[in-house]
Image 1: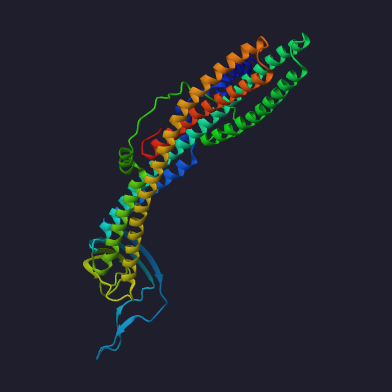
Image 2: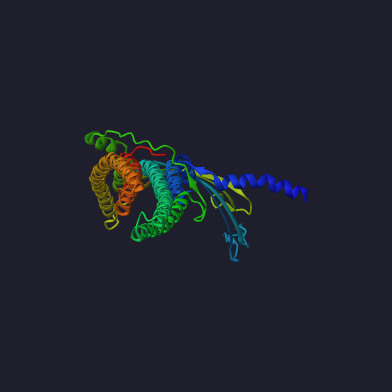
Length: 438
């Protein structure tokens, strides 16, 4: 019992820490990338592409094969020769019914019209493309995590803002009821504040629901249980505006984007594939060597029921002189594959230019929104301070107070949203430039 109690005392603090620990943005990215199923699939493709390179390399090296066989023959008369003057036939060899064959074969390609080297190069380019795809997928996963992080932050800030606003409404409602008892305000003033309180309460319920949904999306992005009670720590948001020059960032995107790197590698792979297809028009030359260990060995006469070894070595030439257009069909397919890769690269360049320009404009607008919303918030807070002071001395109506509170709530909401939108827009722009965002 004491051991169980001690174990609980040791485990409980760790559990409480795990439950109450707040994840920073960096910790969220690390956790999400580690648990990402998409990245596991992407890594699997990279491993597979690397194995394809090993496979292509192996075709350039000598191929060593071992063959073994056993054959049981039907019974036949022995091989005999009848000679003049000899009363009985002369037996040349006995009937051997059990045949055992073992062969060790070695084949080395000498010339294949550069087919094997082209296939090797194509595999290497495809492997480079897979690695670029993996880097792109890591960036995409990181952006998904960061976006979910900031959406959760936005939802939390909205709920906190409404909670504070609700407490403020309660205080104003209580003060107004006291003023009503003293005959300083009318019942209509109280009703207006009660309606405001109810509306704020409804907004609070909706905000709590949005927060729960945002937390579920965040947990999913991190590979955690959907109902995990995760909390985040955004720290101090850096609102330092970064100046971007459009021509420079377009150039940077075309140099760094992993999608372009992957497509360029695939274009090179298609060029190598075309060379491999054209190699079918040339003959193939192989060096062959065999070692036999048979019982009986048919090369040794007369055959005897015993294991004997022999060997041979030679050169083989294989040339398809006519195959009903197979070679030309293979070449045509390879040419179209290269054409598709070239066109896809052009389309990707156009799409990236549009994406970068769109993200650049979004970033510019989001940075402007921060300045405007910060200014608006300051004005709304100052207006609320003045109206609140006037209301306390009955120089402003409850309608004025409600309008001032609503303006502050809206201004604070706009400012919080502007901060989050700025962070997401900046990260999205950097991702579209091919920069590492994790």
